[in-house]
Every structure is written in structure tokens, then in C-alpha cells.
Amino acid sequence: MGKYASWAEFEKIVPTNYTEKATPDAYRTGMNGIAPHGLKVKEGRVGHYGAGVEGKGEQVVAGYKRAMFE
Image (cartoon, rainbow, N blue to C red; front, side):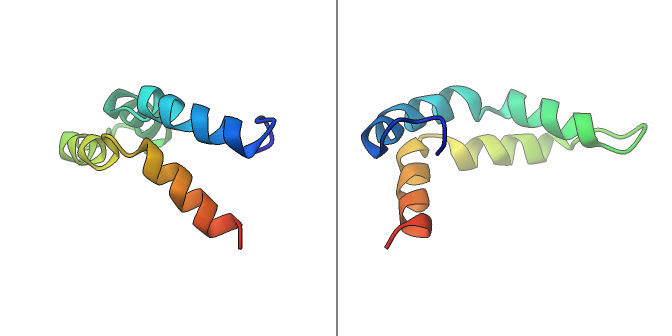
């Protein structure tokens, strides 16, 4: 949370950033970047990732809050 000035700012910005950056294309690029030579990520995994993150920005914030604070 170091780059945010306050929790209110974190709650406001993270869902938008998550929605914009946690995309199937970003996942594909990242996984292909670490894949063993000659292999690439399975497209089924890319689709599953996309379905799993869609509309979940608020849940990321809620999960972080539960995990980090009492």
C-alpha cells in the first residue's frame, strides 16, 4: 500500500486499476514471459483467469483489508 496516501485513496483507486490492468491479455503476456523455452500459456487458462477477475476490484480491496488489518 506504499504508493497510496491513505486507505480512502487505496479504496478509491485500486478497483479501477485492477479492472484496467488485471486483463486476460496482461495474464497471457506475463505467463508467456516466464514460460519454459518453446512453450506458451494455454488459452483455456487465459480465459479462466479473465472470468475469475472480472468485476472483482472491490473484492480485492476487501480481501486486502481482511488480511492486513484487525
